[in-house]
Every structure is written in C-alpha cells, then in structure tokens.
Image (cartoon, rainbow, N blue to C red):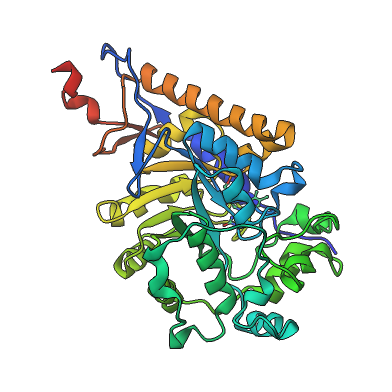
Length: 398
Ligand SMILES: Cc1cc2nc3c(=O)[nH]c(=O)nc-3n(C[C@H](O)[C@H](O)[C@H](O)COP(=O)(O)O)c2cc1C
C-alpha cells in the first residue's frame, strides 16, 4: 500500500528556521560570554538539552547511558524516553550527576491490569516493571505518595514508573501530550520498523517490553502505541499526574496558545513547544513558528522550551530570541550517538555550544538575558528579530 503522508512538517521544521534573520549589533564588549542559565530552579551550563528519543540502543550499544553521560559532562539537561533501551535505573547509575528528566507516556488502564495478572505475586503494576539491581537513595520527600489515590485505579503502571523516576533522582516529568496515537511516518512504515530482537524496552517486562519487536506488516512502533498507550487522555489526566507527584511537570508537544494556557492554568511548570520532530500531525507548524504565540500567552507564568529542526547554534539563538528558555535537540544527538557513542553526543553538544557562543559574540550579546523582548519586523516576507537586552546597560559594563 502506498503511504501518502508527505512529512511536510519535517521539512518545514528546518526551512522555517533558515528563513529567520538575525540583526547583529556591534561594539558591545563580548570578550566574556556566559551561556549558563537556570531551568526549573536548576543551573545548566548551556541552554541546549537532549530531547527524549526512543530506543537509543539502536544507534549505539551503550544507548541512553552514553547520551546521559555526555549530557552530564556538558552540564546539559538529558530527557530519558519511556521507550528506552536502558532502564531508568541503569541511566541513573551510569550518569548519577546528570540533570535527568523523564519523558512519560501514559499506558492504557488495561495494560496494568493485564500485566499485573501475569505475575500474581507482584500486583499494583510492579509486575510489569523491571526492577534491576539498584538501590535508590531514600527520598522521604516522596513518601507521601506511597498510597494510591482512589482515582488511580488502573494507572498502576504509570504510577510505578513515576515512583521509580523519583527514586532514581530524576527531577522533572515531561508528559508527552501530542501522541494519543502515533502519526503516520512514511519511512517507518516502509521499513516495517520493529525493535531488533536483541533489544528490549528496558523499563518493562512482558508485552510492554517486547511487543515492539514485532510488526504485523506496517510500523511496529505504531502498533505498539495503538495497543498500549491510552488515547483517552484528557486534561483530567494532567491533574491526576499532578496529584500523585511533587516533581514539576512539563507538557511536551504543545503548539497553540490555547493549550499552553490550559496547561499553565492547571499548574504545570513548563510548556515544551514541539511537533515531535514532524512525526505526528503532518501539516502542523514548525515549533519555531508556534513558539511566539505560546510565549506571548504564558511566557510570564511558566518556562517555555522548544525542539524541532535545531541543528546549529544559530537555531538555538533564534529560539532564545523568540522567548524559549532552552532549546532541545532530538536527531542531532542520535547522529552523534550513532557515530561514536558518548563521545559523539559530547561532540554534538560541544559544537552547538561553540556555535552558540560565537553567535552571541557576533551579535553583540554576552549572556542570556532574564527578560527578553522580541523585536521583529518583516522585510520581503522574512521576519527579522533580535535580542533586545543590549539596550540595557549590562552590569559589568557599568
Ligand atoms: C527516532 C525518534 C524517536 C523519538 N522518540 C520520542 C519519545 O520516545 N518520546 C517523545 O516524547 N518524543 C520522541 N521523539 C520526538 C523528540 O523528542 C523531539 O521532539 C524531536 O526529535 C525534535 O526534533 P529534532 O529531531 O529535529 O531535534 C522522537 C523523535 C525521533 C526522531
């Protein structure tokens, strides 16, 4: 069967960024550049993080552990996917000092019930969760959530994942909200994608770990999501998630002011503007196009991040100039990982850092301002914008 999805959004992600122009300012002492910033109360060395991408063991045998170690050395945020080939605990052990966030997919209620029935000795969903040889540090802060709230019935698998994430020292939960089902990804269908049989989804056992190793003729990952992820999620589930954890919650996959406002009103900590790397709705805007409306709507209440099509320092600069607190990269980190594991990811981050630093210097900026105002104007169909902090006298110039 011929698949028609053109993957326009994938193309748009990259070319929209190219259309934006930067207006450099001159003579502004950029001998010292400071790229570090604060996200959700944590200091990061650079405003670039690694987005969650599933099954990194396909890119390199060291998988997510290698990526997390590279992020740790760079002082950058690392987001681990639910669908990882290294488990939560393995990543925590490999990169204890990394700034680790966890991306969450919520599984169907019946999945917990089904899997829990499979091994009757361990009810409450723990049966489907693989407990590796890992002794998490005591975290009394989280002891309040040991008892399942009444409305958590059927959500045991998700709840158990959250508990493990908390115990393993992850500091933020990133709830992906743009994937009630997976989009039609032409190349994945054509390739009849499935996880090679020597790999597993390491956070689970049973069907949740291995169903993805099979495909009934299309994409194994689409079949996995259709069979196991909960397509009934609503804003009520965000409230539920908030009720069961103290970790800050970030909503990933928001592309409109309306949804950003709903999230901020519910008390999430940040909005992550993303079109899932052009893998969900084909025809959705590039994240960098949607970013200004989200920043305008909620930028003064919550932090805003973005990903999609960020491949060089100037892209990060543009995202910051448009109001993102931080930009993330998905595929570029995978390319580095596939090339040479931890060293490859480290290299990608260091190139981005160098390019961003250079962009700051060449545009007359020496740090990331706390308050940016977008100045934009249009010329021949091109948006021109700049960071406006340089109208404020910086402290070390006074
Ligand atoms: C191979 C691959 C796997 C991905 N897996 C996940 C995932 O497990 N969870 C998720 O929220 N997003 C996932 N994404 C989307 C990324 O988090 C991110 O939004 C996207 O890759 C950003 O675009 P970029 O690749 O152009 O940087 C995946 C993307 C790719 C390319």
